[in-house]
Image (cartoon, rainbow, N blue to C red; front, side, top):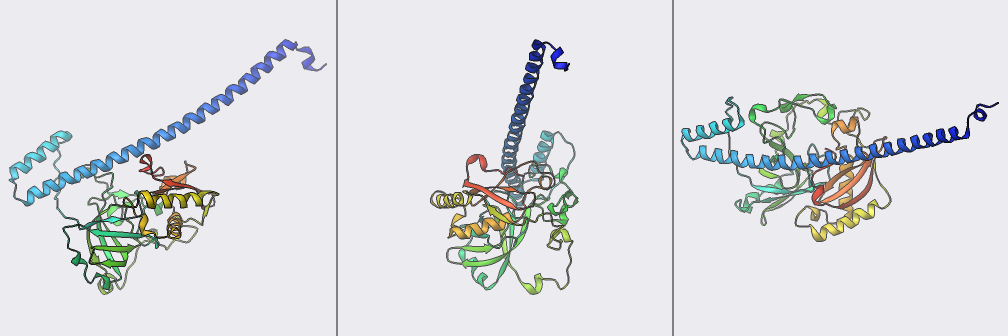
Length: 370
């Protein structure tokens, strides 16, 4: 006799009900766990975005304070007053360690209009994106005639301030000595052996091709600049080959294109578009032209096809953080170019698929995938 014939029907019904209940409970638990996990991820993203905004704002405020202190020194404010200010700052921080940091006040000559709306997505080096166009507009206190004869040079050095750093508010005594370059996948080197923006003095230097010089209206168009929109420019200097190009030079492979293809961690094989992504990007481009042209660099791309080429060239650079490239936690990413948010995913074969596009909104100002 089969065992089921010896078990009362009522017992079988109870067992069946318990099994069904257990399955329902497991399914419900999985659903709740998945929902909670997604909510925690979203909260973590929101927290980081808010924290980055505050760090940038705090850094800007501290820059203003440092400029004021430097101006006081330059105008002969008594040492006793400066020492009292320093003592008050040490008391507020609760530290007795006296770290004297010499300050220098440098005026800027203008700001950059750049298609890189946020730090995330801005190339790590100049000349990586040939389709990138940026405009330096001189400030009103700089005469446009300062640009006369600059058109006789093919390239220029652009000296700028990393104004969106998130570590400016930290005391000088806590300056980091090492960083982890993206091409080393987690290995550390000295910060002064890199071009990292997070350096003791947040000053950058980029070489860019000169496209146009307008000495009447006081602006210069550059190709290949790696600067975020609104970057303050300290100076530009023409590139002179005989003195700026050494006869012999060398550099480690992790800073250039010396990697073999199978060793290059930043390689993306191709860029494709999902159904609907291309029309969405075209609609966003047209809308941005109408509503945000004065707020971003969209007018630097006269045709939609120019903007598409720029987007594709940027997405061929894997802009994800090292930890995300090595161990991906996200399924989708976004980058904001000329105030158009491009949504995309990265396949296991290291190709990028654009899945959508839209005009930037307030909650998208900071990146998701940093």
